[in-house]
Every structure is written in structure tokens, then in C-alpha cells.
Length: 56
Image (cartoon, rainbow, N blue to C red; front, side):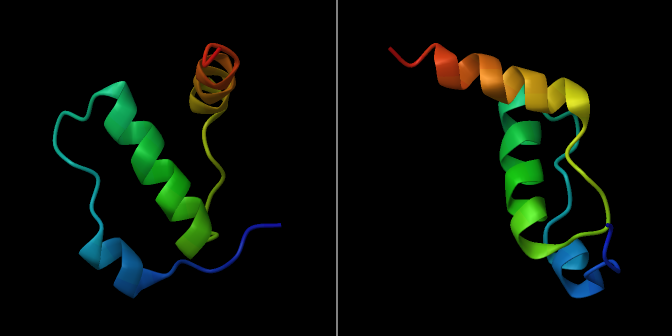
């Protein structure tokens, strides 16, 4: 279930212009901790999972 937008957090934490994949992942992880207005996109979740399995 999605929660209302945390407007103050969004105003202070804008996605950078032309973010690379690392920036997008970092932003969405912080976003999920501070705001529940949307879920992390599936494409990013797949990449995060892929990266976590390549740490060995």
C-alpha cells in the first residue's frame, strides 16, 4: 500500500539531473526509507539484486 508523499523530503532531495544508475539506486533507496509515495521501479530492483549477487 502506498503512503502519502513526504513533500518536505522531496523538496530537499531532488533526483540529480542526468543521474547515472548508481545515483538512481542511491536516491530510490533513501526515498523508500523516507517516503512511501511510490515503489522502487522493477528495473532498478533487478539491477540492485544483480549487484548484490556480484559482491563475492
